[in-house]
Length: 510
Image (cartoon, rainbow, N blue to C red; front, side):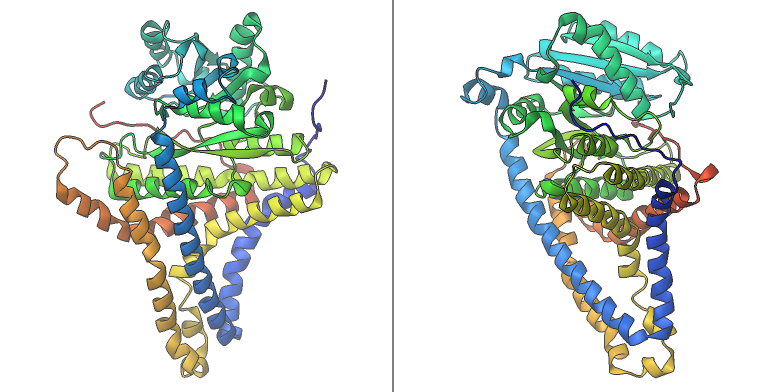
């Protein structure tokens, strides 16, 4: 039986190609208009800048309120023994034992120490490990040497879980683009073939969790995941999103990497309080039945984590959502063997995430073909995805760089006006008020630090706190610039298109 709408997307159409160009067109159009209008109508641009700064201030307040709300829920969830709650809650006590978990861990050339730590944390889960069917996946193109890691993991953890399957994803399969999406699709199908079907496990009782290989779970993760799955309104029409903490190696990384990692955590933590906008990111969980219904992950894309959400949204005629868990998983912050190597990797990682703008063309095309999704829902998602990528590329530059344009380009006639005289003062007052958001996040980051290593002193807290003064740099250099880069490459296409870039995982002393 076919469930949902089968929508075939032809990427060769002019409409699809046009929608790949639109994001960059909007970004560059914004910058050109700002410069041009600052010359032609500087007073109007000055008023716009003031209004935009007010909008930024209100957005900061909005961010802080939702961040605080999400943090309180996360703290509360961390204090619960979710396995015990599964056994005692009348809604779950008779059903939780039927639920199984497929855990997919695709990797490329990560260090053995990184992979082993992930398995150690899995083995320390308080959830019954016989319910875990774990897949560790290697790329054939990574070389035979990397597969030795699989042998070591199998030797140490082979008897820890209900099943531990080592897979090798062949290179150069037809219709595939090398990367995480095609790899995950291969792993999920191999798990179905080797474990699920031979044991005749009902697909609707299986939750698939797709983790980066550096993802370390907290002991109660699968407890809260199972409880949420069994108590949510539409469990088979939902993805389940934890909060990514980039804290596995937080004490080893440079300040910029730490701030970018925490900024990502805070953004995703805040998003948990607005579930109507929540899209799956990186490590997340979803029903295995849904993977079968949609034909698993698309095999020719880069942004598999968000694309899988949009695949389900369009396949099930808009009847799909992401349910926030308000519970963390821990991942690596970016670090390389040198400072400048770390900076380069930070930029590349942000650019790869910004390449998620490739989903705009897919979503708009799928909406065009699917007549069952309501116009209201289509407009909601179209606006959110366009506005999100446009803001990512433009907001920080407009705040920190373009505020002086009317004064610089408006000519002497404008510079002697009262508006021109007060523009710098007004924007400074508004942005100073908005800076309380930075103070809030800086303080919260100290509470989210993992257990302190030996040698960590009280004055390190002060250093970690004041390093948030680098926020304008991170928002622009490692936020707006890679977003502009990615969207421009997508518009130009051809040899400028990005392939999947595997973020190197490096631990000091490993």
